[in-house]
Length: 227
View 1 (spheres, helix red, strand yellow):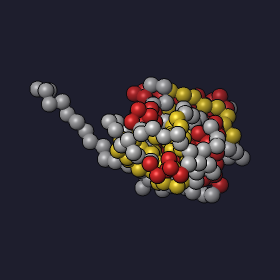
View 2 (cartoon, rainbow, N blue to C red):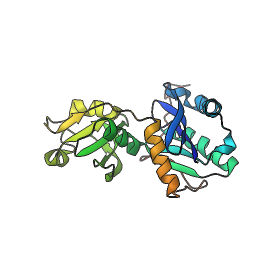
View 3 (cartoon, one colour):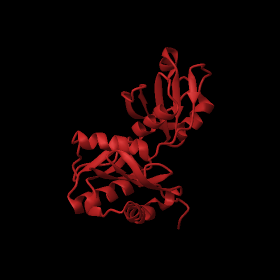
View 4 (cartoon, helix red, strand yellow):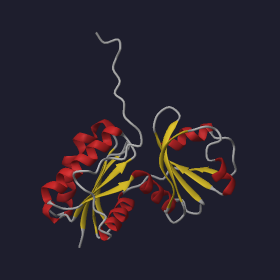
């Protein structure tokens, strides 16, 4: 019996949950992105209490490793690593884009390509492409959108675009009968399946060297008008 704790702070909505043998048991959500850091630790305690288990009952901790919010990714990774280190249990990671695609495949089946998108500001998105079986066909990348982006994919078949990055892409895209847009948020079901698969295959991450997948450098800005 494998209890796995999920921590997801990659996007605007944070999730902390528990799964047992790949089945979601309980989860909590936080919709205020600026509060993710304060949300995680109390939420961990609450989901453990609700499930009636203790920290030492966990078999592993899974965390979405990115891409996503720079600060959010750091919060989630640090929290997951800390628990794994304290309990000497495995760390599991999942691609944010992969679980986004898994949700879309589950809720909106029947497309040739699934293209999740995360808003990376201005005309840029984090994106990847997956087939109907959830297999990666274009690795995650930071992409500056243009009207003819994904032209070849749209010629070959039906493409479903999802995520908050798809909202601005819908306004830019050159008209195509093969472009479709749907909202398909992931939850504990997709996280549980992803983390259980990694756990069974012993795809454990090195606590010392595993970092979030940022895809691009983060640059701090300063207020030039500040005295």
